[in-house]
Length: 452
Ligand code: PHE
Image 1: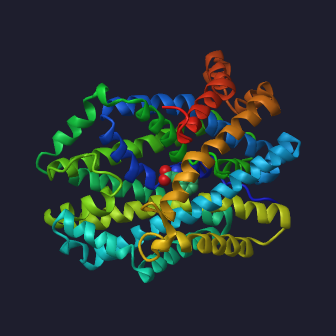
Image 2: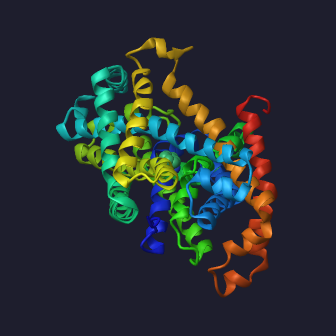
Image 3: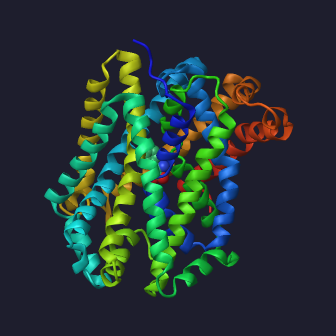
C-alpha cells in the first residue's frame, strides 16, 4: 500500500497553517494579550516564536519528512532505541488527549453556533445572564454530549476521504473561508463606537505588566498555537515528498498563524472596548463576554453567527490535525484501511472526551478543588506533555540524528539567498541545539512550580 502524500506544497502549507490556527488564536490570544499589557506582550511573543516556535516546528516537520512515518515509527527510526520510541509514543498519546478535550470545547462552539442561528443567544442581554446560560448549558449532559458527538463526527467525516481528498481539500476550502469570516468580523468591529480605543490599547505597550509569568505564558502559547509537541507536525511532514523548499513553507505557515492571532485580537478588543468591558476578562471571553455585546448591537445576530462559524472552522482544521497521527500509526504499523483507522481514532477520542464533557457541571465528582477534569487534563497536556514532546523533537534532531545532516535536509530544497545565507543556517542550528531546549526546560520547570 503506497503511503499518502500531499498533492502540492501549497496543500501542506494550508494544512499546517490550518492546524496552527485554532481556538487558541481566537479565544486565548486576545485574552492573554489584554491581561499582559498589549503590544509589549506581542513583542515578546514574536521573539519566542522565532527562538522556539519556528525551530521546533522545523525539527518536527524534518523528522516526518526524513522518515515518512507516523511519530512512533519516526522517533524509533531516527533515535534507534526504545527510549526514543517511547518519546514518540508519548507525543502520539498527547495528540489523542488533545483531540479529546479539544472536541469537548469545540463542541460548545457548535452548540453556540446553533443558538446564534436560532436567535437564542440574542436573548442574553447582560453578562450575568450570559454567564448563567453558559454554566447551565455546560452542566447539561445532553447538550455537552450532543455537541461533542457532532464535532467529532464532522472531523471524522473530513478525515474519512484521506490525505489529499480529506485533509488537503478540507483545508483548502475551510482556511480561505475562515479568513473571509475574520475580515468580516473585523470590519464590522472596527465600525463600532469607541472601537479605535481597543486598537490603541493594542498598539501601546505597557511594559510594567510584563511579569516573569508573562514571558512563560508567551512561550507556552507559542508552542500550543503551532500545534507542536504532539506528533501533528511530524505526521504532516511525513506526507511531504522530500524535495520542497521547507524554509519558505514553514515561514508562511507561522506568518499566517500570527496574522490570524493579531487580527482576532484587534477584532475582540474593538468589540469589548466599544462595550466598555475589560479586555482581560478571562477565558470566559468567548461564551460569556461576547454574546451580550452581540445581543445589543445592530446586526448582532449576523456578527454572532460569523464569529462562531469562524471559531468552528478554526477548530475543525486543528482537530483533524490532532487525530491524524494516530490514524497514520494504524495505517503504517497495522496496515489498517483509512476508513477503519478514522473510525477507531474518532471513537477513542470520543470515549476519552465523555468524562471530560461531563466534568463541567453534570458530574461534580469529576472535579478536584473546583477544577473540572476538563481543565485538569487540558492544563496537564499543554503545560507538561506538549513541552516534553517538543523537547524530545529538538533533542532528537539536534543531538541524536545529527544537526549537520538535519540542517542540510532543511535547506535542501532552497535556492538563491536562502540557500547561501550562513546566518539563517546558524540561526536554525543554534535554536534547535541550544535555545529551544533551554527555553522549553524553563517552561517545564515553571509548570511544575519549581521556577518563578
Ligand atoms: N494549534 C491549535 C490552536 O491554536 C491547538 C491544537 C493543536 C489543536 C493541535 C489540535 C491539534 O488552537
